[in-house]
Length: 248
Image (cartoon, rainbow, N blue to C red; front, side, top):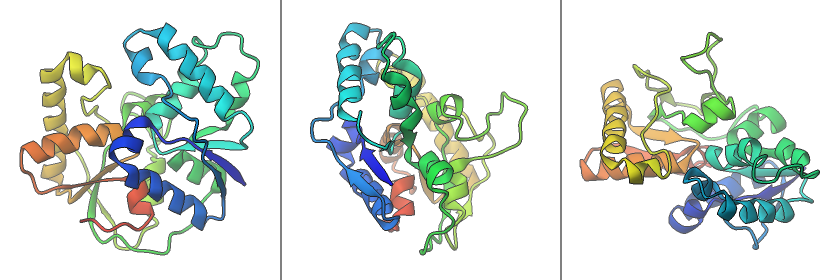
């Protein structure tokens, strides 16, 4: 199995350990990884602010950079959702786009749906609070949503549950937005912060020791609030936990 690895801008610049954790997980599964050094932003920030003319060239570059890979995998649900659900209006009538969309996966859905990982060989003896990002739930369908009548499921929790010693926080509101929303956090700073503090309070009440998610962008927002409030809660991307990194 061969994978083209896409590392989002903010992970590359601010959280490189998440990218390295992703590599370690895939290598342990004996997956051949190709890292295209020409890769750049997927275009999501530009598209979020309505600058489609600026986002379209980035979409074309993404398509060119990953055209020959068997799969494309990224530790970011929002970036993958951008490719699968929002490239259509940036690259209309592009004959190569359907193939790109069908082979592009967020890391956890790749591990559950394609690789079908059965076990991990390490423990994580902590109480974990899972933040389920909006893009992962509503666009990638990585978990059940409270607004839909459906059986409860979570692909991220399914993977984490394979770790010995892990415990899960039971939140009052399992799938509520953290308030980040990309440029929403800039344009509506006060609302964004209040939403984030509300999510953190839910995790505190549930006894969360380690807060995790499949989107580092959500965690970046929450981690900033946790630090400013001087709260004793660790923040880790799910890739770091699955790779066996300690909760420091």
